[in-house]
Image 1 (cartoon, helix red, strand yellow):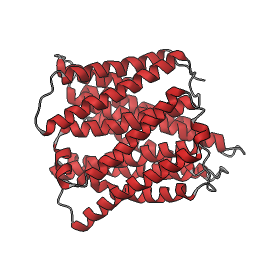
Image 2: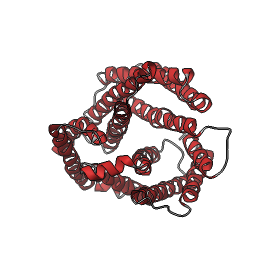
Image 3: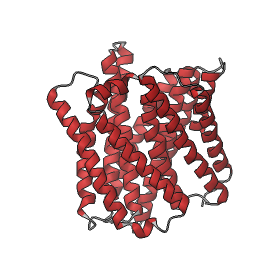
Image 4: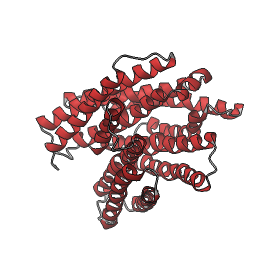
Length: 389
C-alpha cells in the first residue's frame, strides 16, 4: 500500500505543485521500499513458510527468522522515511547496506536449513538459485557506493552497475523465487517431467548471460553479443516448453481455480511471455538503442516485471493458498488492482511508443495519475477488509 501511495504522490507532483517533497527522493523511497519492504519481505516470508511445511521432523529452529524479518522491516521502513527526508544520505545509505547484510543472513540460514528438510520438491533448487542471484546482485550496489564515495563516477560504469543490480533482482531473485513457489504449489517433484529440471539449468545460465541484454548500448565484443543473443533465444524457447508442460500436466488444478484467479494467472503468463519476447527484441541494436534512450520505455518495462508479473503473482499465491481471508470485498480489491496494473502498462506503453517519435499524447500524465489513484485505492480497500486466515 505504501509503495502505491508513493507512486501516487509522484504522479501528483508531475501535475500539481507540491514543493514539500522532492521528486527524486520520493522515487528513491518508492523503489527501495518496493524491493525490500514489499517483494523481498514477502518472498522471505513465503520461503520460510515453505521450510515450515516441509520440516516434518521439526529439525529447524525458526526463531532466527523472526529476527531476520524484523531486521528487514526496520531497514525497509527507515529507508522509506530517510530517502524521503534526505535522499542519498548517511541514514539511508547505512540502512540500505544493513538490508543487504540481512539478505545475506537469510540466504545463509535458508541454505543451511534446506539440509534439514526431507522433500523431493524441485522448488528447493529454484529457491537456492534465487538467493544466489539476490546475493550477487548486491555487487552492483557496492560498485555504486564505491563510485559515490570516491567521487569517481563514469556514466557507463554507473549505468552498468545499476542495471546489474536490477537484472539480478528482477530476473534472478524475484523470478526464480516465484517459479519455485509455483512449482511447489503444483507439487512438482524431482520425479516429474524432465522439462522442469532441464528448464531450470537453461534459465539459470541464460540469466547470468542475460545481464548483457541490459548493456547492449555499450560497445560489447562480438562474442559477448552473440552469447547474449543466444541467451535471449534460449529463454524464449525454454519458457514456451515450460509453460506448455505446466499447463498440460496441471489442468486439473487450474480448472478448479475461481474465475478471477484463472484470469489473473493467465494475464501473468501473458506478461511474462511479453517480457521474454521484449528481451529477445532488444538484441536488435537499433531497438536496443531506442529502448535504453527513452525513459518511458524503461519505466514501462520495469513496471511490467514488478507489477504485472511479480506483484500479481505474489497476490495470486497469497489468495490461492488462503494466507488471507478471501471474501467478496478482498476479491473485488484484487480485481480492481489487476485492472489498474493492466491500464498502467497500456498507458505507459503508449507513452513509451510515442516517445520514439517525440509525440506528445494529450492528457497522458492525467491518465497515469488516474491509474495511480485506482492502484492505491484498490490496495487500500483490500487492506481494510483483509485479515490473516
